Image 1 (cartoon, helix red, strand yellow):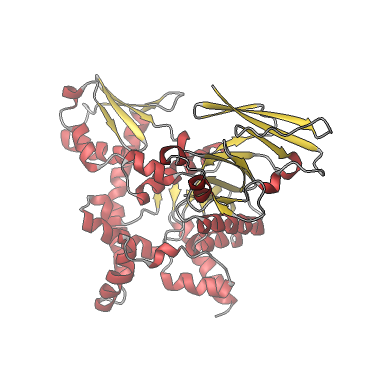
Image 2 (cartoon, rainbow, N blue to C red):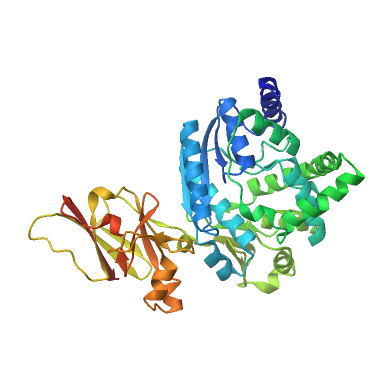
Length: 452
């Protein structure tokens, strides 16, 4: 293995981007980076090609300290590549429970919704993910086991709206050869080794059997996927024409879709089904929406991300607010921040002889120089730890709250305050010992919880 392989891989990558018209060289791309091998390689190829890009990482709070370690790794990786870095932490389990979704589906909806927010806010043209040839092949088999329409036979689309998959040309063998040649480090998700998840079961148990029958099975599925995409191009063109001519939006993000009276019933069904899938409506709900729409005026239909209201001769599709599952950021200039049914009031005082730190659990008196903005408020997750005031050793927050005999329904909603990713206050309970006011403290930040 030598640098010549890197040149071949880079050339294949650039040629694939051009052939599929994924983006133009002067456009700005947001890469979704988990820390796994695929997204690390994709970012490295973007860097070698000198494309303009930034990195986005989502901490789903599902694997405790392992998730935090992933976040730290990706942040350092982005710094090494000298590119912009964006990150967020979600309470994925809470969202999945509320919407009655699997953890995997909940995580997908949360991350793609956030990616789109970042794309718009920071003027990125596209969002790139590290899906490759094997991922697409596995997806085709998964879709077959669940039952699928036309879209399920193309695997993972190379380009879908603002989502692009520039690594779709690469086989698993090419990926491993490249990472060895480049001496790249990556994070391995421990959940990838278990076969309790359907994708892992197909990867570890099913795909090897097909490859025994056909050593080129991965490529065979890729060829089949390309044939299906040709059919989808026609449908996509029809859908884009419909959206351009018929669909309107308002300033609040609501979308207005008139019923398709100008289409044949068959054509309208195809277009409508494709369109509603973009808003995460299930096949069953889509069928309910399409069945006799004039009989259901005023009726509401929900997906995990949107609400559709049948309003006379149109659909009104509104995005749901996922703010409850995102952290709240506190900027340096903030004096009051709302969270839940409370407000957090922020004061700055000099530490002099007359200053006495409050012992109330609704107050936090912290060494201001130990903090870095923006501060962050979020619900605590399993695996979170801090050093309680008066202790120099770590303690899991779940154990701390259990020792305090905090009721379970209150415990699960406990909020924490973080600075630079470290917990500085279990809000309403105790601050971290590392951020306490000491004789060396010059400036004190006082935070007070008050009901609205």
